[in-house]
Image 1 (cartoon, one colour):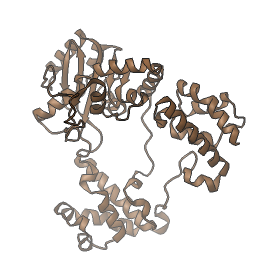
Image 2 (cartoon, rainbow, N blue to C red):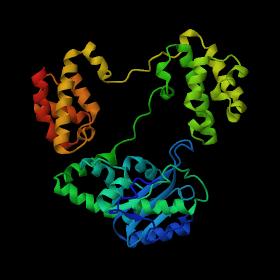
Image 3 (tube, rainbow, N blue to C red):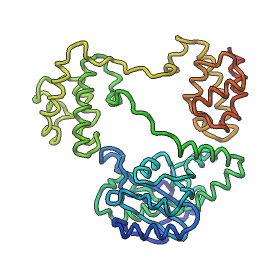
Image 4 (cartoon, rainbow, N blue to C red):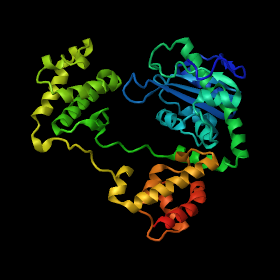
Length: 407
């Protein structure tokens, strides 16, 4: 299924790359790619394919690169883990990606660390485009139809089917052309500098810190109101994670969240009771019933003082906005006024409000504003939350005015 309406006559289907490429999986093949890219010119289009939902973690299983004069290269990073020679060939040339935050970590894992980037998805957001998926942006900007039916397949499959490789090559086929068209639109809209700052921030952003108590992300856990049941969730999550990691399988395929929640709700006392639950009645879960029951039994034996609290560890910063009206009514009033201003500004500038300013930065500003609210102090507060210069220039003075009107 594609993202493009088949009946749209203005869209030309993009069905075949200009130079079909086979997978590069040897040192000699990589050397030929490096030589070709050394002789190419201009930016490098890049994309990565993972096996999310199939494999444990976010490893990259295919790297797609394209450059004018060099053509397209499809590289197997599982056999060629060190691709730093690509960087030696292209130097500080710009890399063009769509949704760069998804691909930059995988590229870095294999030695590709661009000195400059252009993110076509982020450019589309700054231009106020309603649809920002790659196929939609290619359709709207270039009038080309890009099929996305293989976006969620298991890219760890070997050998990769020919139609998957065709799809992978097409993902970078028109990225550079798309970049040029979007760059012209950004320039015309007076947003080119905004985009440059956003791209650089994205390129240099550190990886997010690990989340405390990741087991609390099990769907439905928030509905549990008993510490013993929370302990069962934690024990089953840990057992699932260990099994998934050791087998290199996505955790959800080892044991779905709904099964963990069902066991935590029912609290089965033995494997017989466990496999009576519909979520554990399948062949795979019945085969591992002893493993899961062992985790449940461990949680049931925990002394009371070792049971996990119903609420996770607190995070630095303000509480959830829904609590503000009771805990800090003045802050709630500030936030309401600031959000109204931000919504109006986003509409006027044709930029999504979350791209105009990170919501967390706005919440923190409203919860704990500067002692003396001025454009400078508001700008400093935004800078502490990683706001970019263009955002501070646009927002510091009007936000100071909004906050002063409420305080």
